[in-house]
Length: 228
Image 1 (tube, rainbow, N blue to C red):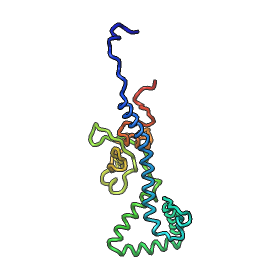
Image 2: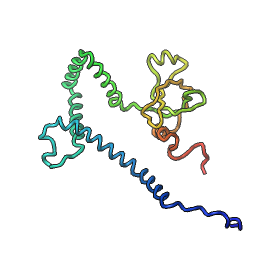
Image 3: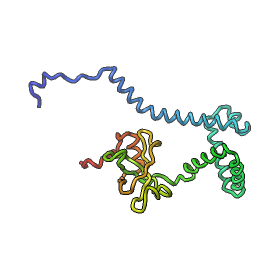
Image 4: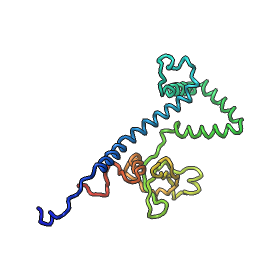
């Protein structure tokens, strides 16, 4: 229903040509940017691996002389095959003996042994223990009471940390608190189990919430709002 006063109200102006072009351009950027950056990253990594691996491969094994073109990513295939062969040999008795002999030589080198032991520890932590991951997401009061942060429960505190900081009546959990928007960096904190509020959402959903700075709620649902 309209009134005589409605006729005097100014009608909303339609966006001009420049505004429509700007809106279409921004929409295109949102669509193209993730795909373009992903392709660029894969292309760059493949080129970097090729530049490192292919000079070590004999010419007779390279496919370029036979097909006449330079295929990017061939170095990755050579690297994967070589890694599988090394792992297969290392599992055998002779391979383990060679590894122990090589490590005994490395331990006699003052500088090299420090670098080797550090790299080996990182590699074993990342790859050999891949079954270990964050158990569940949680909320903790950090950096002070009344301020809540999302964290990930990694494991129970052990060893000297549990003995000195925990005690019999105060078992500790190691909590990783990620930063936004880069969840790969953060803080390792130890909290009493009673101060850790576990969440029902999965670790993946909690990571999405951290990366988006709270803009993307898991599954697009907010349990605090009543369902319609």
